[in-house]
Image (cartoon, rainbow, N blue to C red; front, side):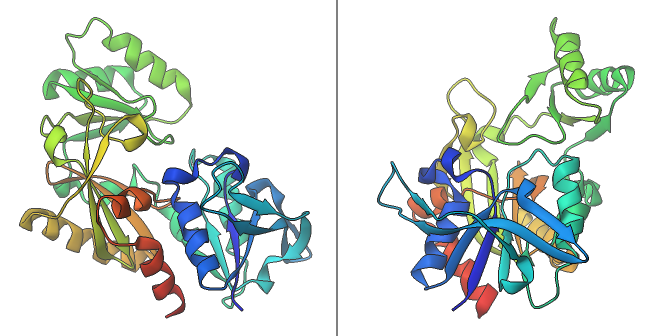
Length: 310
């Protein structure tokens, strides 16, 4: 029997209706795998042995009130497991970063997905910078004057933090906006990290796509339509999912990025495309597989486990 440990956010806080981690666990359980979950702060290492305080887990997709059955926690060696899923959401802070170093110490007999060094080396809003020719005009900086000058030259821009997700704290603005400096100062004050300033692409309402990749290969495409009066297409921000496909230009983008993603050792990635241009490469906990299946797309969790264990 395969044993799977999932490093994840607190199960008690998960909405199973659209959670990819839960969907992966359901498919694993359907295949007879034994499931365990643990929180990131449950990791410990002593004399070179990495352990975690884990709870044996059963999942109940038909019970929205109690979707997780959790046994009493026990500390166990992670090297005893066949596979560790790293599925905690951002922010990708120093705690997240440090845990990737601990997980790096596991033997090759325990597969960690995504690979911790690949997670560490592929920050989601920065890794796209390896492909500037595939992106909209982009500036990453903490220099308010430089960002203001970029905005004057670019026109409408999107400002967003580096470490958050799901459309959080994203604003559309321009140099004539009376609230521009307020938006900018709020983002700069949010953390010590630089922020992203990116050319706004007006075709976002028709062209925002999440591309699911396994081992650098496209396995599904979900379109995201912003809610009326909103430019943010993220599903968590009110966007509507639709089944989609790739244009020839997008296929070219995905081929180039997919080759690099595979080279980096990333098993499961979610590329964000807007107006046929690359926006982000999601590797910490790629999601939207439930929404993709619901609109008639492929069952990514099935494909996922098929590839993990052949």
